[in-house]
Every structure is written in C-alpha cells, then in structure tokens.
Length: 603
Ligand code: GCB
Image (tube, rainbow, N blue to C red):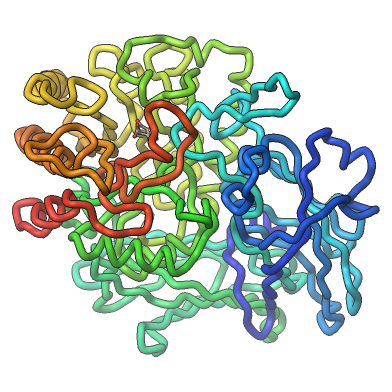
C-alpha cells in the first residue's frame, strides 16, 4: 500500500496530513556506532538542534561539519491523535539524502536508497495513538559507484571521510524536504493516472485509479471556477470534456480531479489533484504540445540557495519562476535529480515545461567531469563490477520518479541520465535496459531523453538512438577554445553540428547546457573570460551556430543561477555560470536571453 507514496499528501474529510517540520535533534555519527548502540531506542547522544527541512552543511561554521561525510541522525517526538483509529498511519519524507533508515518508537519502519524521492513509512503498527511518539532517522550521505548520483569516499589522514562526487554540485544532504504524518483510510485510493486525447475542441481524459480494499471508484472533474464538468464511475474509464480548456505553454489551465472510493453508497476515501489537459508528441523533428510546435527556452537549474543549500523553499521557487518569466523562458530541466514536488506544482500553475531528470549523474569516473568531458579520456565506467547494483538503483529511481511525477502536466519528458560515458558497448546495453523499463512505466508515454557531453560525439556515441529527442551539453568557447579562440570554437561547434545533421536522424535536438563562468563583480571591455561581457558574447556566438541548424528545437542555458559546488581550482566558491547570481539578480547575459526569447522567431 502506498508504495513510494506516489500521491502527494492532502487533507480532507477522510485523510489528514500534519506537518512535522520544525526543530529536531541532530547528531553526527562518524564511527557508525548508532545502529549497533541502538540510538533509535536510547536517544541520539550529543545532539544539537537542527531545523527540518534543511541541508546541514551551510548551517555550520566548522569545515569538518560542513564537509561531513558518513552517518548522522535526526530525532524528534510527535503526537498522534487518537481520533482516527480506523486509519492507517504513515510518515512521508519528501526526500532523505542519500539513504535512510526510519525508526518509530524504536522499531524500524522503512529503509530507502536515493536522496531525491519520497520516503514513505507505514507506522500503523508502530505508532501509539493519543501519545507522544519517538522518531529517529539514520541518514548517510556517502557516494559510491553504484549510488545515484555516483562518487566515492576518500579517508583523510586524520581519519575523516571526505565525499568525492563525480559531479559538479555540492553534496548537500539531510532531510531537505518536508515531513508529514498522514492518516489515510484503511480502504484507500493508492494511485491514479491520466492520459489525454484531443478531439477537435473537445478532449477525452482517460483515467485509471488504484485502490485497496473493496469498493468502486467515482471520478468528478471540476473547472477553474469549481463547477462540475463531467463525472464517471469505475476504476478506469474515459471522461469526455466538451470545449476543453487546454493546458498551454505559459498559459496553464488546471482542472481539479476528484476521486472517491465508494462502498455500499458510502464514501470511504477521497483524493483530489490538479491536472491539465495537454498532449506531448515528437514528430517531424519537432516537439509538439497540443499539436503546436514549441521551441524550448530556459535553463538547467539546481535546487540551491545560500544557507538553504538544497532545502525546498517556496519563496525561492516563486522568485525563480518570476525571473524565468521575466526573461521569456518556458522550460527548465531538473538537473541533476528530481526536485521537490512543489516545483512541479508551481510549473503546472505557470505553464512551464519540465524535463524531469533522475539523479543518474557522475557515470564517468572523474572528480571534475566538467573538465574531463570532451577530453576523449575513457574510464571504463560501464565495465566495472558495480554496474549491476548501479543498474538496480537506477531502475528503481526511474520508477519512483515516474510514479511520483506522472500526472503533472508540466512534465513533458523524462531525462534518464546526465553525461554518462556513452561510448562503450557496456553503456549501450545498460541504457537500452533503463530506457526499456522507463517506456513501460509512463502511462502518458512521454518522450525519454538524456543529456550528453562532448565525448558522446556523433561518430562515437552508442546511445543516442535511444533518445526521443537528443539533448546536448556543449561548452564551445568555454572548456573548448575559450577567450581569444572563441571563433575557432565556433568552427568546431558548427563542424559537430554538421556531423549530426548528416546522420539525418529527424529528431529534435535540445541544448541542455551551454554556458560560461561569470563573476557578477567582473567587467572588462572588450570582454575576457569570467567577465559579464564575455558571457554575453559567448551566448550570442553560440546562438549564431544553433540558429543555423533547424533541427535545434530548444536551448536551456547553464545555469539559471550560480550554485554551490565542490572546492577546486576551477570553481570560485561555486559554479558561476548562472545567468542570475545566487541571490537571483540578473547578470548582463540575462538581457541577451530576454531579447532573444521574447522575439518571435523562436516561438
Ligand atoms: C556539465 C555538467 C554540469 C556542470 C557543467 C559545468 O557538463 O553537466 O553539472 O555544472 O558542466 O559548469 O561545468
């Protein structure tokens, strides 16, 4: 029941959700002693107060705390009311990064691998109703070559563990999303999905609902004003919507769908959600939403903000959407992991298109994949003994992501990787299976893709044929021939594009990354690398090449905003490729994108 809790928590006459966010207790466990010493029963020693949700790293002032790698614990007490004895009881964490074990009153209630998708614990038997309950959570933030994302751990001479990501963002960890106590009827709606067919000005919503226990399903659809549009009965069926209001790009219309579980004329459970009628199709080398071709304009993003780290925050999300709307964007990629569900809710409301990415990043053995990409260096990643375990985790997380996000109208595609080594037969076999699995899971059969770095060249890549549209991450004029050599870089860029063109793939290409590190403080005329003037020039030059190839159907600049990354000689307190600063103010290049994205030739 409620496997992965695909349904976002809601409260109504049958269900209750109570937030457990607040000040919890927190303790590092560098010797991994907690499980054996039963801290989940005895309480966690040397605890300090810690907000939940939060990412602990940037809250501390000592290096060994910020950069901590290993086990750590959270604990809190929560009260469970006793007026819902007939309900099942769950805890739902939006995510726990990267792996967790949850204990309720000393009893293990869930274990979970993967740091970016919900952790749901059935505590019906463990909870004490009408009393205070003890909750303890073991967390570990280490990375290895079978975790998503990939990385490794180095033990320093001092004995301290240092997590070494194979990717370019800070390894923020902890309970970074909200926690809810849920009370759900014993016989409940456990999942639903919708698909759409447009018929002239009308539409069919094909729905499928899953429930536990006896009973039958009743479905009702309400318009924006709350008026009933159509209703239906049965676990699956079709709702005919006359003169349907479509969910359009940057012009969203959301209906409310209400599902009820009825037994002998009595409603046992109800679940409501907001859905949008829209179709997605890849055809004739273009991306079509509701039968209209759309050019993707926007960003690769991160969940990242000063002090908050990767903690979800509604105000940051709101500001991000306002900035993206201001410069004419219509799309973003959840690079490089599934974001908090609230991001997708906002995208649904705002009519943004989302490429939803699983945390399959770092599948190339390199501590600076951004620098290693394009060098031709080969690391035999998909020939390692860790691959079967990695693949198992990858498949599970693809499944959890699709289960969680399948009903969001904003989600128009799933990205199943970022920059793996795609040049070996091992990779081809690995990704064939991942894509096959994903294709079976999505009821809407949305396009599947993955973002490919420079080594995934037209003559070397063994995986591009799996992608419904091809996503390229390219840094011509930055990692490749930057600064005074930018004209040469553009020649190389055009050469690569011609090679793709010659393949006559007839699928759309989207640039999912292109960018130049730029310090908000630096100006120079004429521009040099790291100045705002250079970022402007870089963007303009790249666009000149993209515009020469009609099969380019989208451009998502890297990155929406500056973000925190691991320390190193290539990063100045984080990655500075933001078009906006980390506190969400525009750099000069934001105006270049605004002019371009608001001009009609890209519509
Ligand atoms: C990439 C990665 C991204 C990095 C970016 C960069 O190719 O996909 O995670 O942040 O390059 O800025 O180097």
